[in-house]
Image (cartoon, rainbow, N blue to C red):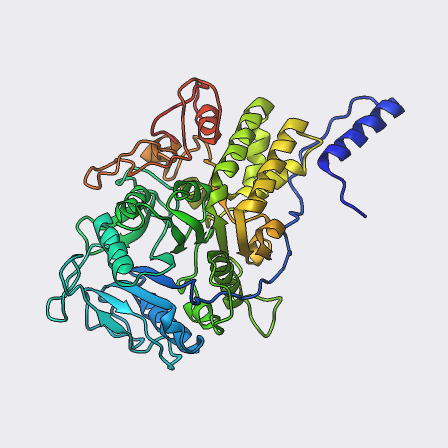
Length: 524
């Protein structure tokens, strides 16, 4: 039996009501529903490998100068073992270059803790499958002192991985010394998504502890520095090659980076983006499975194939092979995003925001938001990082098409339809619906910031509420030396100043301002 569209369903209900002479009916909001993406499982074949004519350089920006350092050692060992399992001769078509900033991490797991500076490695194959082994890859040098890295083993340097100039220099080093047809840029570290707020804001109970719109934390840098999203954006644009070309894939091996706001921000930097909506497990991406799957020179070297491989390998890693219905960690997600579709997605989201204001059912829509799949751990985190699955929220609206207006329902469906083309591939563990597959099937993989209004943060006596957090800041304040500044812009969060709600950020500003005016500065 074919599915009946929302439009057809609404028309049938209206027609039956007219013919039967039924009186007006009062409908109640439904907060229990079955998202069509739940349990949608469509494994994708692992068909990627760098080949002649589609050569690749993987640029891994590995900031291990923090508490994640042990996992950095593990991941380099995974890369080495994965390259060992790749097809013979792949070294002619693939270079994996890792800028690794190491920190002394005192533990008893057998990690090599004898150095604490910043080094560049060209990954080489290693048959040892141990993730705790010694790094066998070749250390390489900036022999001409062009990029500011070590010229030899006798003059190694410590770099601040949160400094955008270090990122620009690394990109230039890779593109000039290891040119290829395609480039992957992977950021490895902590991530917090599009969050913003004062540096000195103490948020009791929060796991984020005031981290702001950033991806790389360097704890030994002055001021415990972070690489902010605007700095990342500027650093890529400042590089020699990427000032005129797009990165094929920007990947985030970090928590909470799979947001609409970040994907929209990077749409002019890259063709595709990979990242997790949720908190990543500490071990992150399974590089041995990703690289080891490149086992034939007859596979596709396209960025689309690589994006799908990253998602599928992540799903495979977190699924128990002896129990496909079970998982080792059921609160994981991973997505590959087609950034060329982000302008269209933003337009559909803005249309939805306008319809939400016109609906004038703010408390009902907030009730649906509160039921939506989210990516925080507890109520305190929810006030700190209110990240909600965009597909899931829209599906709640669509499932309440009788309660809401036809206009709002079709605007929500349009967002879902746009997600089906913006999402290349996505995976979600059981906690998020147990889905996996190409975007046209699952239509999930990006979250959006939906603040909890002016509800107080805890402890109550701090006096802080969300009007102090700076969620949507479109000013380009990126001076990392200025306390309490918002550190960068997210151009998804645009305001035109005409006093009319014409987009998502303006809707938030309107809803949560006591005077129902659109605030156009660092408020939400």
